[in-house]
Length: 114
Image 1 (tube, one colour):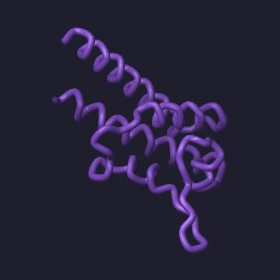
Image 2 (cartoon, helix red, strand yellow):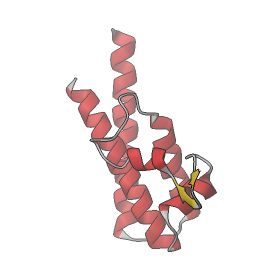
Image 3 (cartoon, one colour):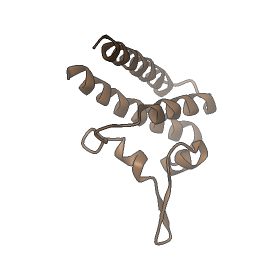
Image 4 (cartoon, one colour):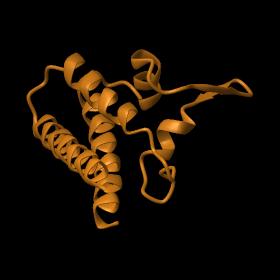
């Protein structure tokens, strides 16, 4: 169970870092990230737009019980691929992504061994 909590925390940290680095590099919003990546759905409510699903992944309290980790991984890869700025945020995102991939591998191995 501890591994699952670490994985959930890593998902949130990776997505938060992705959004922060995207905003730093592009000066665009997380809504723009959702739209340009095509990974996250966008809802239109009374003349405004929202990316509720992406928003739910930005906090442990609102992260779904069964999160789609592939969406977080794809987002991190999209942001890194489309942003060139060398900065501490980029290094942080690269580290978070690597950590998440390692945890995902460990979880897969644990499920295979069971």
